[in-house]
Amino acid sequence: MKKPILAVSFLFVVSTHAIASPLTPENVSADLAKRSPAAVVADLSKNGRYEKILDLMDKGKEEWILLAPALAKGTDAGTSESLVFALATALQKNPHAVLSVIQTGGSPLLAADQVCSPPMIEPTKKQLASYFKQAIAGVSKVSNPELSAVKAACLQNLEKVKAMP
Image (cartoon, rainbow, N blue to C red; front, top):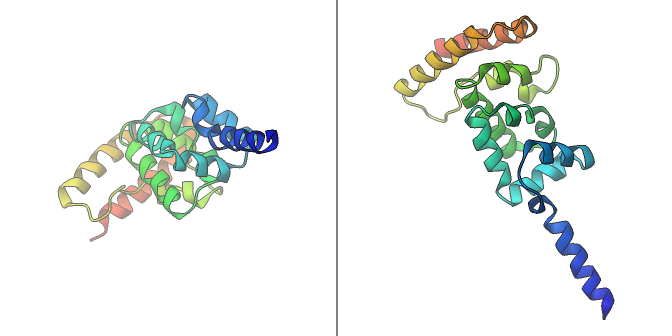
Protein backbone atom coordinates (compact mmCIF):
# COMPACT_ATOMS: atom_id res chain seq x y z
CA MET A 1 0.00 0.00 0.00
CA LYS A 2 2.92 2.36 0.55
CA LYS A 3 4.08 2.19 -3.06
CA PRO A 4 0.91 3.77 -4.55
CA ILE A 5 1.00 6.51 -1.92
CA LEU A 6 4.66 7.23 -2.68
CA ALA A 7 3.92 7.30 -6.41
CA VAL A 8 1.02 9.70 -5.94
CA SER A 9 3.12 11.89 -3.62
CA PHE A 10 5.94 11.96 -6.18
CA LEU A 11 3.57 12.92 -9.01
CA PHE A 12 2.07 15.67 -6.86
CA VAL A 13 5.51 17.12 -6.10
CA VAL A 14 6.57 16.94 -9.74
CA SER A 15 3.31 18.41 -11.06
CA THR A 16 3.42 21.30 -8.59
CA HIS A 17 7.11 22.06 -9.18
CA ALA A 18 6.41 25.19 -11.22
CA ILE A 19 3.95 26.61 -8.71
CA ALA A 20 5.80 25.64 -5.55
CA SER A 21 8.18 28.59 -5.63
CA PRO A 22 7.30 32.27 -5.89
CA LEU A 23 7.32 33.72 -9.38
CA THR A 24 10.53 35.72 -9.45
CA PRO A 25 13.11 36.23 -12.20
CA GLU A 26 15.66 34.46 -10.02
CA ASN A 27 13.45 31.38 -9.58
CA VAL A 28 12.59 31.19 -13.28
CA SER A 29 16.26 31.60 -14.18
CA ALA A 30 17.25 28.85 -11.74
CA ASP A 31 14.57 26.59 -13.20
CA LEU A 32 15.85 27.29 -16.73
CA ALA A 33 19.36 26.33 -15.57
CA LYS A 34 18.12 22.98 -14.20
CA ARG A 35 15.60 21.92 -16.84
CA SER A 36 15.04 22.30 -20.55
CA PRO A 37 13.56 25.63 -21.64
CA ALA A 38 10.69 23.76 -23.33
CA ALA A 39 9.78 22.03 -20.05
CA VAL A 40 9.95 25.30 -18.13
CA VAL A 41 7.80 27.19 -20.65
CA ALA A 42 5.30 24.31 -20.76
CA ASP A 43 4.97 24.28 -16.97
CA LEU A 44 4.70 28.06 -16.77
CA SER A 45 2.03 28.01 -19.48
CA LYS A 46 -0.01 25.28 -17.79
CA ASN A 47 -0.13 27.24 -14.58
CA GLY A 48 -0.88 30.67 -16.13
CA ARG A 49 2.49 31.92 -15.01
CA TYR A 50 3.87 32.42 -18.53
CA GLU A 51 1.14 35.02 -19.16
CA LYS A 52 2.07 36.73 -15.89
CA ILE A 53 5.69 36.93 -17.03
CA LEU A 54 4.57 38.37 -20.37
CA ASP A 55 2.45 40.97 -18.54
CA LEU A 56 5.51 42.01 -16.54
CA MET A 57 7.55 42.23 -19.75
CA ASP A 58 4.75 44.31 -21.33
CA LYS A 59 5.17 46.78 -18.49
CA GLY A 60 8.87 47.14 -19.27
CA LYS A 61 10.16 45.28 -16.21
CA GLU A 62 13.83 44.79 -17.09
CA GLU A 63 14.43 41.78 -14.85
CA TRP A 64 11.73 39.89 -16.76
CA ILE A 65 12.70 41.18 -20.22
CA LEU A 66 16.22 39.83 -19.66
CA LEU A 67 14.78 36.31 -19.40
CA ALA A 68 13.46 36.47 -22.98
CA PRO A 69 16.44 34.80 -24.71
CA ALA A 70 16.33 31.81 -22.35
CA LEU A 71 12.54 31.52 -22.54
CA ALA A 72 12.60 31.84 -26.35
CA LYS A 73 14.56 28.59 -26.57
CA GLY A 74 11.55 26.75 -25.16
CA THR A 75 8.66 28.39 -26.97
CA ASP A 76 6.36 26.98 -29.63
CA ALA A 77 4.27 28.92 -32.16
CA GLY A 78 1.78 30.45 -29.71
CA THR A 79 4.19 31.15 -26.88
CA SER A 80 6.72 32.56 -29.36
CA GLU A 81 4.24 35.05 -30.78
CA SER A 82 3.19 36.11 -27.28
CA LEU A 83 6.81 36.63 -26.27
CA VAL A 84 7.52 38.79 -29.33
CA PHE A 85 4.36 40.84 -28.71
CA ALA A 86 5.39 41.40 -25.08
CA LEU A 87 8.83 42.61 -26.13
CA ALA A 88 7.39 44.82 -28.88
CA THR A 89 5.05 46.37 -26.31
CA ALA A 90 7.89 46.84 -23.84
CA LEU A 91 9.89 48.61 -26.53
CA GLN A 92 7.77 51.70 -25.82
CA LYS A 93 8.44 51.57 -22.06
CA ASN A 94 11.95 50.20 -21.68
CA PRO A 95 13.70 50.29 -25.05
CA HIS A 96 17.16 49.82 -23.53
CA ALA A 97 16.20 46.48 -21.96
CA VAL A 98 14.45 45.27 -25.11
CA LEU A 99 17.34 46.25 -27.36
CA SER A 100 19.68 44.35 -25.05
CA VAL A 101 17.85 41.06 -25.76
CA ILE A 102 17.46 41.51 -29.53
CA GLN A 103 19.79 39.07 -31.19
CA THR A 104 21.69 39.68 -34.37
CA GLY A 105 22.73 36.37 -35.82
CA GLY A 106 21.02 34.52 -32.96
CA SER A 107 17.45 33.41 -32.57
CA PRO A 108 15.31 34.65 -35.47
CA LEU A 109 12.51 34.96 -32.91
CA LEU A 110 14.41 37.74 -31.14
CA ALA A 111 15.60 39.52 -34.28
CA ALA A 112 14.91 43.21 -34.82
CA ASP A 113 12.49 42.50 -37.67
CA GLN A 114 10.33 40.53 -35.23
CA VAL A 115 10.57 42.57 -32.04
CA CYS A 116 10.64 46.03 -33.62
CA SER A 117 7.16 45.81 -35.09
CA PRO A 118 3.71 46.75 -33.83
CA PRO A 119 2.42 44.14 -31.35
CA MET A 120 -1.09 44.22 -32.72
CA ILE A 121 -3.35 42.24 -34.99
CA GLU A 122 -5.46 44.50 -37.21
CA PRO A 123 -4.61 47.76 -35.43
CA THR A 124 -6.31 51.05 -36.19
CA LYS A 125 -4.34 53.85 -37.82
CA LYS A 126 -4.46 55.73 -34.51
CA GLN A 127 -3.02 52.75 -32.61
CA LEU A 128 -0.24 52.36 -35.16
CA ALA A 129 0.61 56.05 -35.12
CA SER A 130 0.81 56.02 -31.32
CA TYR A 131 2.95 52.88 -31.27
CA PHE A 132 5.41 54.16 -33.85
CA LYS A 133 5.68 57.56 -32.17
CA GLN A 134 6.47 56.05 -28.76
CA ALA A 135 8.67 53.19 -29.98
CA ILE A 136 10.77 55.31 -32.37
CA ALA A 137 11.20 58.06 -29.78
CA GLY A 138 12.20 55.57 -27.09
CA VAL A 139 14.63 53.61 -29.24
CA SER A 140 16.16 56.84 -30.57
CA LYS A 141 17.03 57.90 -27.01
CA VAL A 142 19.06 54.77 -26.24
CA SER A 143 22.66 55.94 -26.10
CA ASN A 144 24.57 52.80 -25.12
CA PRO A 145 27.30 52.34 -27.77
CA GLU A 146 27.15 48.55 -27.32
CA LEU A 147 23.57 48.64 -28.59
CA SER A 148 24.18 50.93 -31.58
CA ALA A 149 23.96 48.18 -34.24
CA VAL A 150 20.78 46.72 -32.71
CA LYS A 151 19.34 50.22 -32.27
CA ALA A 152 19.98 50.99 -35.95
CA ALA A 153 18.40 47.69 -37.06
CA CYS A 154 15.39 48.28 -34.84
CA LEU A 155 14.85 51.85 -36.05
CA GLN A 156 15.26 50.72 -39.65
CA ASN A 157 12.61 48.04 -39.21
CA LEU A 158 10.21 50.39 -37.40
CA GLU A 159 10.53 52.92 -40.21
CA LYS A 160 10.10 50.20 -42.87
CA VAL A 161 6.94 48.84 -41.24
CA LYS A 162 5.63 52.35 -40.62
CA ALA A 163 5.96 53.14 -44.34
CA MET A 164 3.91 50.11 -45.38
CA PRO A 165 0.41 50.82 -46.63
